[in-house]
Image (cartoon, rainbow, N blue to C red):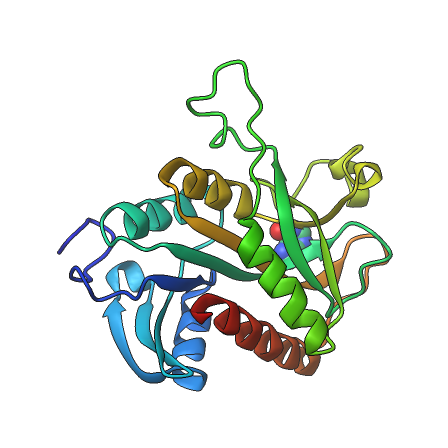
Length: 237
Ligand code: HPA
């Protein structure tokens, strides 16, 4: 075992990886999108695979939910396995009525309530941001495919169930341009900055917290397919 969380050997991963939270989504991506996919990690059932997309090597590794879990996998993918391009694929809640369910959000920056980003910055509030080349490529490719895409500030929260009901838990964030909420990107972007690699989060908005609208099962599947194909295109470019 190479790390306590990952049984892959050096070289088992490609330089670029897609990062879903859900292990079964990693399996689904490997089985439905990648050529010649091989399982490279199954410690704790946090599945990772390497295969090909358009003839180029690419990996997919689950991170689990939330920033502490993602941080363990991402730290090791970068520092033990040498990965250079990390693209989170996920779902998010919507904090703005202009973002409709099924729309794509590219997280240009990630606001957070998490203390995980504070570690090491003392009096400073570090601003976690996406890699610009990945962000630009994803925006251009999404538009070319006719997908509805928003580029903006994402909340990476440590809290799924807030004490305050509905939108109250999000305070002044929506009125400051924070358009979506998930639980991972701020840590991903901070680790990418710390270790000099590229990262981006691509999310399908599945639950609008303003209107209460949710995506239905069939639309969820189609939207996820489009998002995975887009993320793979960006990962191997
Ligand atoms: N918070 C709220 N709603 C959501 C989330 C989240 O992290 N992810 C998907 N819908």
